[in-house]
Image (cartoon, rainbow, N blue to C red):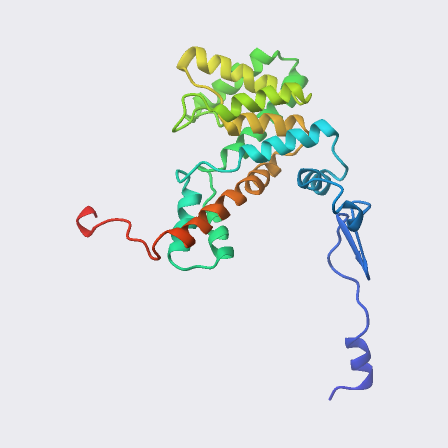
Length: 259
């Protein structure tokens, strides 16, 4: 039997198990990182909002422009990535838009979109180690190459399946110089590129450039995939919409004799 005392206990205000310093929610009031949301709306850009949420303060004008450039650079790579193909196949099967986008995101893994996280971690740990051991940039670059060679793996952030020179990486490096985001991590990344190009003709790709730039902007390597996803989702949405509006549903990918 439910007594009056039990009822009082059921409706007694309880302290939430969740704690956050990101956004405080009160009746008719939302405060994010110390800023009222109605003051942010219409006054700051989306890259500024992303920076504020992640870093806890507002970016400088140059940091805003650099992050905006990074996000734009991730926008799309046509039908070539597995994530885009997965999202379009789901759209062809009749899945709703949210499921198609989720499918595209879930296709990100070690071999697709995972390179930026590994590259950021490698650069950040190497820069710290070089400072502790008083190594030069060249010595640190050579050490990274030796480490990856010893385990038989390619250095993440270099080389591309479709481009001998990724045009996005080249432009991002120029912008990093312009916006004052060319720090120790990018200097190390460029040094690695110089050595790889001299020995194997391999250039830096977009993951390598953005890994170094985001590291110089003070972002922890764990944020790498998240930043990539924020930049790539609009492109996935565009592909999903195109598939739904233009292509025949449940498209036939191949003939039986092709199996």
